[in-house]
Length: 577
Ligand code: NOJ
Image (tube, rainbow, N blue to C red; front, top):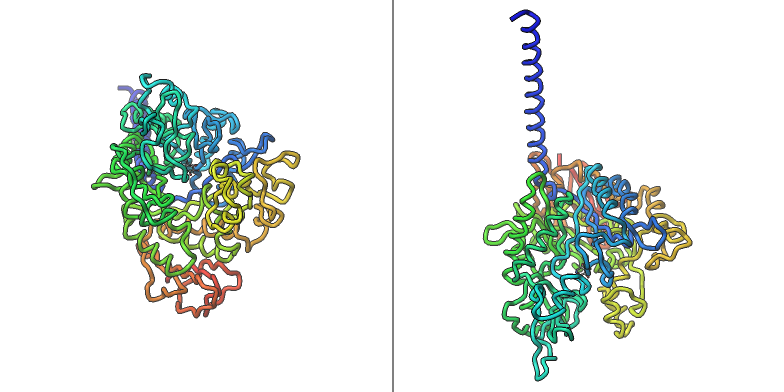
């Protein structure tokens, strides 16, 4: 071999080596990234967008996908890592998207599939994740599946929904006594089939029949459609209702009007036979197998269900089998703002959702009264609750607008656009106003407040927004709060940023600091390896002597924080040195 050839061969071998090394390194990097990514959901922070109310770019008074794209930097800069968007697929909008007529098409009110693809790409470009809201339990009565199913008792989709003959001589009496989650009766008569169909929520939302394997497969394929697009997971609407008792037995009575963590009750009825059936837990395992088909990145499942922690846990881990990654733990929403109550709540979370499970920390959503209103308008309490939400062990979920303290906007039932309000419009308004829970969900869905211009920057001033904006928008809006270092918004920003650079607050162990806890104080440690943090929350209206000595205070909810005391509703995050 001549020198030139020899060099060429060496050169080639050298190049090959370099290529090989680069390839190996990139594999290592990809593997490391995958290893790192597998648990991304455990340490993430989630922001829920109600698309109708977020940002309107096309002048129809309704928020849209383009609006979400335009506001992604706001969320990124604030420090959120994941967004969950309430449904935006085709729907007659009687339940504003939770009544789906086509699972794989975008509602024209919100945009196009192309815009959705851009949104997803823009989310990923920013290193963020997107969770899709999947309504598996029911469709709209305008869905082609239902139209076909309702057309006769013999059509090919005849048993895609839960049909049952009525009782009584003419078969016009409901098949059993079940109540739906929204309070109404759970059966609706179809004159075409001369039968009743079951609806766990509202009458125009017929429940799919998951005992039929074809239904399950069709819905799993819907999931695959969105997973193939690259969504990072699903929020599973009303997953507690996915199965019913196969014998459709009557529900027993209950002494309560509304659900509690001990009993799932609706209008003095324990909904034992139409919610939380055994099969719902194994369904979670099957669904998990679908998301696990996607090995390139972890796709996450978060379920919506009421119930005690002990029951909720079964969605995530049942008989040793993994199912959903998370469930919403709604007990926190209505938990009285008291140290002892939070203490008990967090003990429960830790008991049932210890590693490898993860609790969720949820204080509001598009169905429930706005948090600040629940707390009597107190920004101090909201800051304290936020400190708890972002430092306790769990995945925090923020409902849009909570970060600036949008209050509940009173909208009388008679003016309600929400299907629940329409259903309840005959109730005396005086009684409704007394309730802490909203019967008109419009009240917690009013538009985002971006600035102090007319319509608060949600839509242009000459357009009528689909719901009125909160009157306080002149003071409560993003722009104003951005320029105030002491605002609720900047408190969110600080805590989000601190959390993102403090692994102990994301993945650290949790331990109540029992010697500091009292009727007024909730205190706990978060520890990871040799990093230890203490969170002390004074949940009372009085000043309390500070028993902690040493450590470095990283954050206080109060500007005028003192060393020796905890001010009323003051919370501190301290690094133990
Ligand atoms: C729960 C959703 O959060 C709610 O908004 C919806 O109306 C019902 N499920 C029915 O889909």
